Length: 267
Image (tube, rainbow, N blue to C red; front, side, top):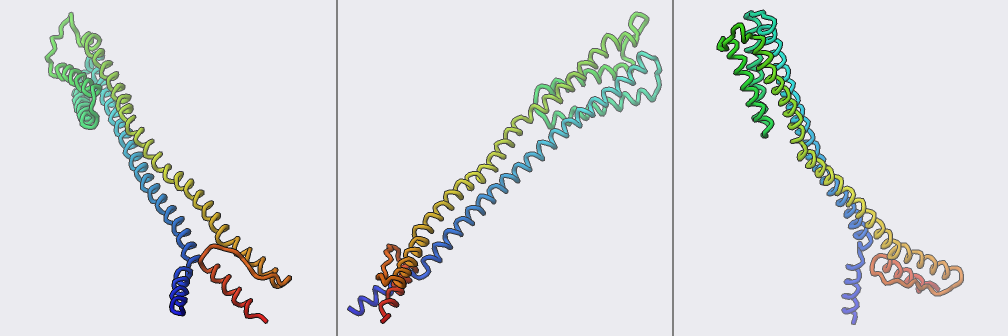
């Protein structure tokens, strides 16, 4: 019988030693891990948002710079052609400006074609090629000018219309390049939503965990302590037998048994 009692007491001690401490530790560690996990997920998603934002801004800046380079080269070419064909100042400087503008415009269109796929860029490349060919034919003297068809007539009837078409296609390229950023913007929006979602879920779960934590503390620890305190106070004041009913088997139960043992030894 003594051996059985000894085994039972040993098992009871194993169950009770560190019970409150372990539960407190598990509760707080769970909260910390939840906060840490949600924070890591949010940081990861925010990093993706930052990278996507940087890519979108760089793409938009590159497209605007290319469009600006095209407009600048086109205007330089147009000014030089006006001086050559309309005003009649046929000089080597203006010819060099035309050739330089042709090279710049072609390079910008080629770079845009490599970065952006679409009908707008293809159409722009075609019209730029036609315009540059017209100017090179003029510079090389391949156009049949005479009294009926002068260089000014060529500018008004042929070059000007193609110049306006190229300028309008550059504008379409700019707006079209901006519209291609739509999917990237939508992806950025979804990534930002994913970055906020873990924080919101963690907040909801944290509120639930804290409420549950408070409930278990109140039911299993605070109320038993209050009952033991009241029962001990009644015993000391009115000599009412100490009896604090509790169902838990942890340090509080061990404390209750020790108080009863101590009371039983009083004279």
